[in-house]
Length: 284
Image 1: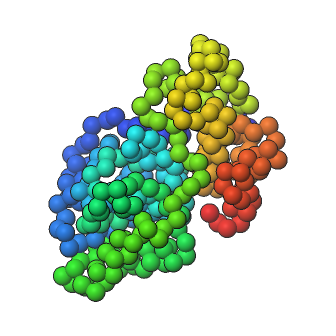
Image 2: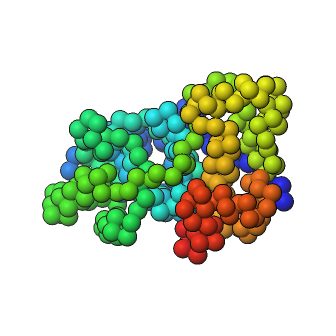
Image 3: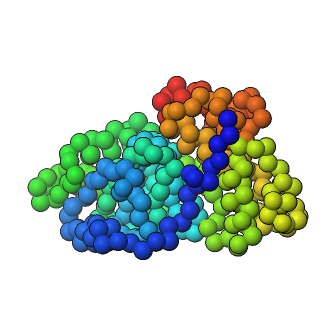
């Protein structure tokens, strides 16, 4: 089975925000300080041009996978993880999954410079963190200080501690810099179009009219080797296909360019810490 991935790859949004989107962002930013907003949304709520909020955000991926463009890089947020976006940080959210579902907490809190809370991050949820987030969401679309001061103070205290007690996602699922030069951009697009093939550095260089040496240098200048980028990119795409739950693991292995399921299983475990079968059994 041959699947090209160019239809799925997340690219920075460059369109102009429409009036409905602008009203939504303005509404969030104009919320009074004593209110925590909680919004469950799908694709319609995350397909926004680059923007920022005066609130700190905790974006929890409930279903599917999320791409976040922030602080000059593209990040990948699998199901069951939280993206922590400090106040005033420019960002875009998108997804390659048709059935994406996220829960966004808009928090009227700020943090001291260089503290964990003032830094963008992706966190893996343990059972205690997850239970607290679901508990808060069970109270509706907002938690207001004037109506339930005790619950509001608890939630604020929880989120102030979150960056300190949460486990930062350490797996190398951070993509390449978004500020790359045109030739590297062309190479990444070529990789997207041919991801299901067993690509080598020479293949990509030839397909983009570059020398292998120059292409290798461009990747290294962005802090990653070609082989590491290809491996991470394939695993990210595999996770997206797994989230759609429409293909077998064997089909996914070939769709993302592995020559054999055994190779896919080995690479997947190196990146994710467990086999794709184990992850599937956990329902992640």
